[in-house]
Image (cartoon, rainbow, N blue to C red; front, side, top):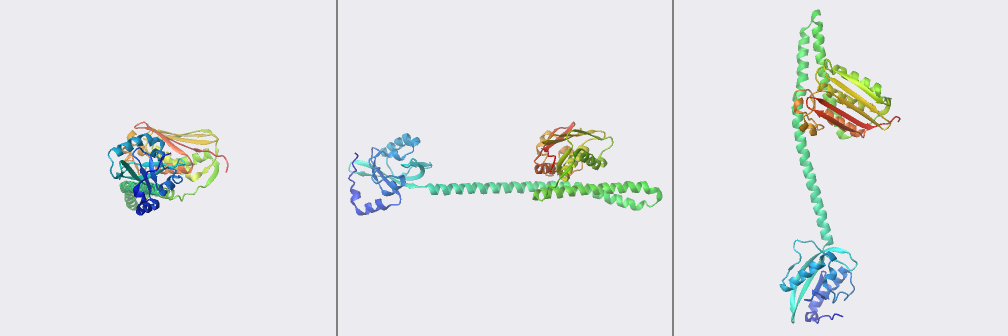
Amino acid sequence: MFNQMPLTLESEAGFKALFEYATVGILVISSDGRIALANPCVEKLFGYDPDELLGRELEILIPESFKNIHVKYREHYFDKPKARPMGYGMDLYAIKKSGEEFPVEISLGHYRLEDEMLAVAFITDITERKKYHEELEMKVKERTLELTQMLEREKELNEIKSRFVSMASHEFRTPLSTILSSASLVENYTLADDTEKRHKHIDRIKSSVKNLTDILNNFLSLDKLEQGKLEMNEDEFDLKEFVSDTMEDVKSLMKPGQNISIYHDGLTHTVQDKKILRNILLNLLTNAIKYSREGDAIELRLIVSEDKVIISVKDHGIGIPPDEQKNLFGKFFRAKNAENIQGTGLGLNIVRRYLDLLNGKIEFESQPGKGSTFTITYPHRVSL
């Protein structure tokens, strides 16, 4: 049995009180690495009974993965002892009698008693402090992320505002100028022989008003989608008839010689929100017409199975440059080769948001000068 050293300082009342009632763990270690003294705080901290630690190797309090290297550190300390914190810049851990590891902070001191050098370790459990710091670091990271996201959103909003101003200055000015000039000319065509000219300018006015209405409808749709105010209203209907009716709405937009072929395979009866599906189809068909040339063919394919609906719209128009395809579904995005073609740059963004409501997705393939194919897929139901 290891005999406790007859430390003369312990006999002094002041030292004894300090040692016994200190709220920090205190260990006195002999030069051979054994525990000579352990105060009640350190015994409680590590879960040992009174005097149970005396004579034990210090490494009993060190986690297994650090024991070997700790022996070298201890021996090195006794070679050149000095008062200092232990493991500066490192995370230190100790191990309780139960095997539980916990973070600690250790300060080292030394003194000589008779012919032997003794080390003194002051041990503090920093579990709560470490937990607080980790929580604080997490809050800082979260706040930093929030600020970064806010800056990104602000940057995105500024870009969107810039694109909106650019789009609005073109898309609103053109139809308004047409309306103004046509209205002025109509006033001059008062004779019976001017009927054809009047009708021509009235049609131009109607077309321009429709363009403005479409632009405003896109803004309203986007606003409702972003605010989550769009309500789903599902109906049972014949999908084939529905597509034919939708086709009537785009015929007036078709350029000379353009033709839309419809191919249908599978079921016809379906359940869906007709307004949302109509807006999706109108956007895809309008784009196919707008970005195709006179005389180009457009194909609309429907494949309807028990569990899903696949609709694709294929054109042979100008296509989308590869380096710009990644931005295709962004707000107000217009590809460089489409800048002179009327449009808000909102249609595909709205289509994708609509498909999110339908638990669907949109994919596309495109080659510049050869056209694009947009394919939507969403779950299919045949009854409410």
